[in-house]
Structure formats: structure tokens, C-alpha cells
Length: 81
Image 1 (cartoon, helix red, strand yellow):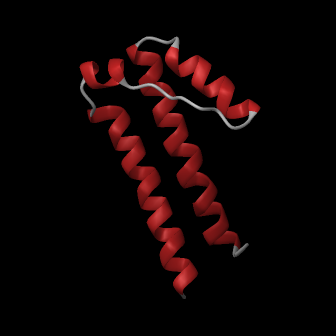
Image 2: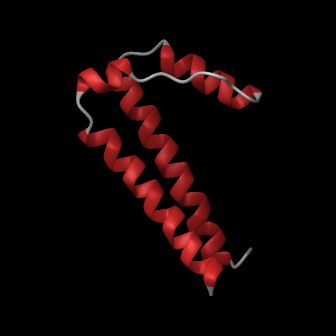
């Protein structure tokens, strides 16, 4: 039962990330950057994010939230916990 609450919280966090992509000011997105990549995927994401314009940053943040919430929705529905 506790695991389901944690998964629901993670799904809501993904939706908050998606909302952030839509409602963040351009100035704040322009100042946002990532540092300290731990693996190849994060390094490529960091490189794309830091070198892109505002629209591309919004798309990347939206995709991050979509993958995040989609992953936890799949875990919750399929019962893989």
C-alpha cells in the first residue's frame, strides 16, 4: 500500500515537470543549466539542453516529465513493484 502512494507521488511529480515546461518564464529557462553528468545518457541530455534555445528546452523538459510519469504509470498499472 505504501509503495502505491510513492508511485502516485512520482507520477504527480512528472505532471509537475510537464507543467513547468509550459509555465516557466523564458528568462528562467535561459538561466537553467545542468552540470555533472553521471552517465552517457545524462551527458547527451545535458549537452543538448545547454546548447539549445528556449523552445527546445521546453520540449526537452516536457519529454523528461512525460517519460518520468509514463514510467511510473506503467510500473503502477503492471504491478512491477
